Length: 231
Image (cartoon, rainbow, N blue to C red):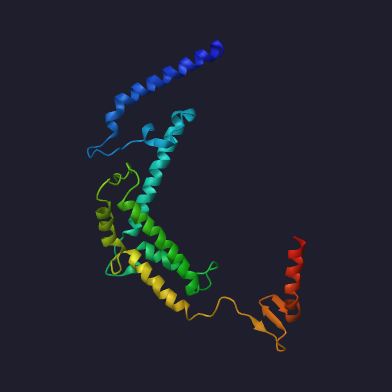
């Protein structure tokens, strides 16, 4: 190490020490009266801290962590929105689920079997959100949610389940499950997704632009045997 590099390293150490002293003096202002963390501090970056990136990198990680926590709060808020006048469509999530029923070009409604898969995905995501809300894996400082307790976890989860996740509740998850069950019943009456047609002489089978003759179909066994022997 040259003398210039050593002097530069010493200067960086002094700068870090000065920053630590300033953080100690201002530490009390980072908490509000409720005791919740209320500032963008480098310590909120947690495991995302990267010493080599410096203070600006830590601040970016802290801001990103807070963004993720606020996004989690938004998702939970949408999932726990109650009905107005007993109308499920008054909630934003149920209204959005209706938009999912349109085709990609918005010219028609999707078939029930196509729509049910989207409802299932929405239901699965909500269940994961409720599980994390009831038993948080870690503390969410920005939105004031503490980490799950070591004991009594079943009781904590049952409080959320009984209010938001049972059929008949006035929250979106129950309505989405009812819609999916109804859609599955409708899907049983729909035509199959693939329709094959026989030619008048019963020698050609076709589907859309695909066609196969019975003569070629009989050659399939010979083709498979030839390919197997070539291995």
